[in-house]
Length: 454
Image (tube, rainbow, N blue to C red; front, side, top):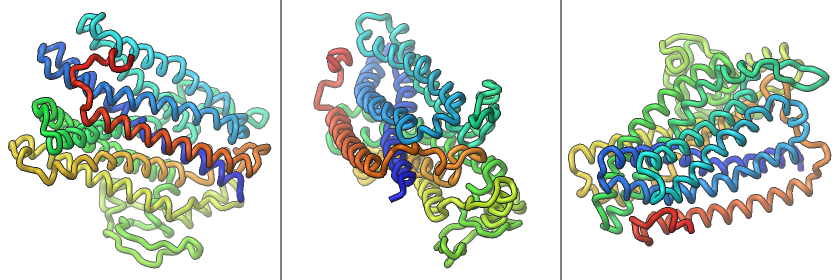
């Protein structure tokens, strides 16, 4: 077995498990902060009860996110020591700032928020949850700075066989960061919106209890869902257009486009033969890929074979074609799930505005399952982002095969892979159990968060 493949698989599993929790933390922190702000402004106890209910679920998710995230950073020193040696001077800076600034900010103020309900003034208490929301999203910002360097290296120089930072400002102004960060944040809002929609639908249909809170929560989820998924679509469109310019191989792999086209057609369904580097079956929309890339019905989109020749002239002989089938279908899964969420969010808002929600029993019955949709969408989106960048771990300057630790054996990787997978599987079961328990409202909804944690 290839140790590099095992190391990649291990990091993929831990990363995907971790990212089950991250988007919900990003989005739910913002929505809870808005709920408590409404309570402070209006004095309406309904908003306070909403804040406490969703706050309990936020705490469970936050704790799981912290536990699963710690392991990822250790892997840089264990399985990817050559990578850490090569880019540690650059990659370590944003990760250190994330831990020392953003994570400490959100965790400190989260403690104040949990135990400060009866000790802080309403305005001060609301300020603490806003600091949690800001800290959580700042944390994502610094991590995405590191990831954006891997996608598009800037502000560096190669000295003595290592990449060293020449401009910290270049990292902050990396163009890839500024198309990636808005997409991640709006994905978080969408994830939180569908989380609220699904649990509110469950309460309204199955429990038929405390409908005032969950009707209001459903409305919040519908509005946030429409806003979130609409912005996800717009920011994703910007990302795709930038991808054509900065990472043409990624777009070509995502479309299974072997030959350069102008105008370029958009694939709906393609059966791919990677060994022969051709498509067995194609259904394409004429000129639609050019429209996606350039906002017009003409424009060249480079094909895989032409980019391969270009990269050979730039980087030397080698195979620069990523796994096309995985790239293609993960991209389709992301877009397909996003389209379904867009329809569901608008339909949920329509039901609220027309006061038809109480009669929409079939919709309420199935809506809890829609909680999984943004998780699937974000997971497949990250799989596409990372797989379609191969064979590079840092685009253009370091290949993945050169980044793995030379002294880690296959048996060590296989053992740790099995252990991590089982451990994370247990954590997922525990997380789902706890979320389901409190989502079903088995404890009083007005119970103090501080008392619940204690």
